[in-house]
Image 1 (cartoon, helix red, strand yellow):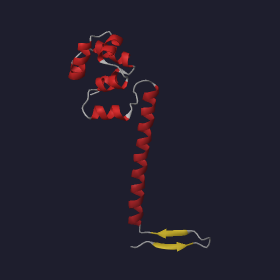
Image 2 (cartoon, helix red, strand yellow):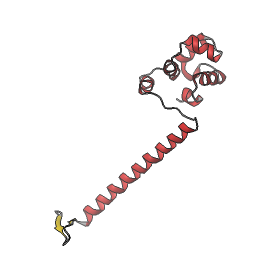
Image 3 (tube, one colour):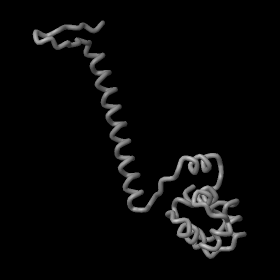
Image 4 (cartoon, one colour):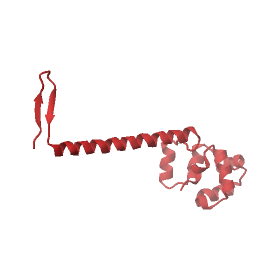
Length: 131
């Protein structure tokens, strides 16, 4: 059935559609509302994590480097503008250990070493070791 358009005495335009079309539109609107509500909840959760220090917002180039395969540790170290030697001095770890951890990921280095790096880089530990 094609929609029909009518005007009220006050000049308001109305559309008459079939019940099937109406139900389809109502379902689409509900799905869009649910998706938007989910996005709002996710954004609120992310804001809460940032505010509580459980997460950190990175510049786009850091996120892209990580997505392109660079280790999180290296990308964050470079973002914080530290050489491996500088990070070694800040964290109390050997530069060679930092190099190995950048190459080997979370499987290299102790949890204590990762904590020291997170503290030196001023990021939550989970940011460095999140797989």
